[in-house]
Image 1 (tube, helix red, strand yellow):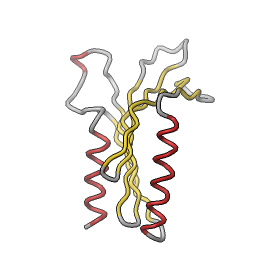
Image 2 (cartoon, rainbow, N blue to C red):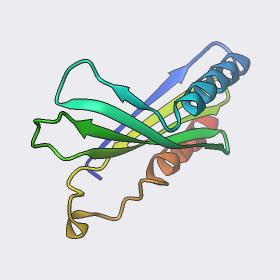
Image 3 (cartoon, rainbow, N blue to C red):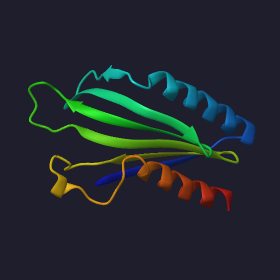
Length: 126
């Protein structure tokens, strides 16, 4: 794991946060199994998979695919959005340098973003 991005957004009420979380969860579920074409940049598409919801968090795996003429390798990312009280948290964990098994660290694409989101939600709740 090389990059972790996280954010916290506070909205007016817990009901508003729950409504946004429900909206984002539905949007993410609609994207499960789809590939999105990106308009510009070093990556040509994002393949979204493994969308799952549980414990106030929606999570997904996104694979950034390079353009056909690029020397870049695909970059898998773990993403999560969570809700607690009147706050939403978002986490994006990018896993660079995964071309060879010996390059891989201890981060887990299935759990890293979710674990970080839960840790952030615990702090929001406190």
